[in-house]
Image 1 (cartoon, rainbow, N blue to C red):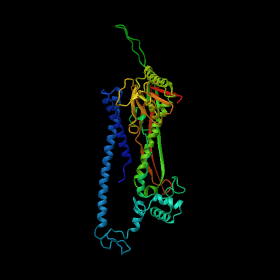
Image 2 (image 1 turned 90 degrees about the vertical axis):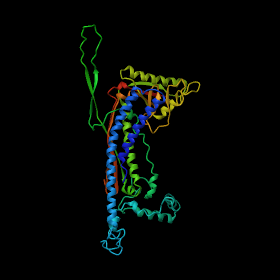
Image 3 (image 1 turned 60 degrees about the vertical axis):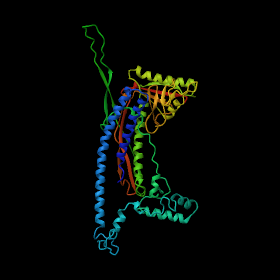
Image 4 (image 1 turned 45 degrees about the vertical axis):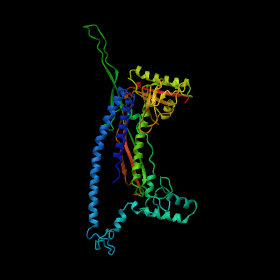
Length: 464
């Protein structure tokens, strides 16, 4: 039974949350301290989201198990009917009425079987793993050396795997997928390499709002809050009226699809289908992360600092540290709470990791060392496994490739809201005839930094 790609994506999300929670707890345990308020809040919120994912995974897994049991029963019934008395091979008859002796029943229903069989069932076996002939080698010999025998083997192999002459060639002339026009052997599908996706990184660290549908949010914001003051005993304070404004957040749709040759899907290992689905889902989350960074970068009214980022001199190091500290203070002093995140691309974080004082000691240290002049802690061991890369001036460092090369952010993550729908996978079997299969994903994301813009400090690195 083919793999349920949606269920696998839920498991990936669950494992990512579990890794984040374990990372926060491990860091606190390594430092022999309690979780900070921000870390505890993050653990609780991510735990709640993991609980929701667990419920979905449990329900879908139960369905998959039930389906597998039904498939197994169907297989046993089919086997019993085809192999029993009267289900012979019918090699002597032309009506397929089961008159022959016991066998596999491949006589009268040959025409039906040839129409319903999948392409991989017709692999002629010319190109097998470790076999005498090489699929890639024969392409080279036929095209570059004029080897007629190699060309004949390729033709025989491709003709056997084609459904009929009316189907669009896999990777052939006129196809949207570049290639040589040949159907690859089934086992070569294992060499397909899935694209590496960074998925949700900064987005996963923001305040998570449960998905409630693709409807606009209306969020109240305090403009003039009610005030209290100390007064003399027995005297009433002056009355004040609170005033609230609202902002509207409209979720954005994220969708994409690929039109794949049916022959490519049916002529290859079924894993190719799962690889394409996985890449589409990964791209869905990549686009959601891109929308988050665009929303933060485009938000008006945020704090701003500019620091020099030239050569890694002592002056430059001091300037960048000053910029970080000024950015932290700007958020706190503007009534936007206490920041907890530093956001930048990986190359920016590695620049910080290289900083040393005048005696050559690192300013951001590996977890195993504790020089007294350190201003942070970091490492690059989990660049793809976790968005958290370390700490910088008590800020959790999160890297994302969608951040600009000359830009960084300091954020109070609880003042930015993010919500995303589980991606829905769709498949249109015949959008333009039987030769093409359209597969895609559809979903929504919503993010806002407008609730409290001063909860963000944008850092611009000049000279980098």
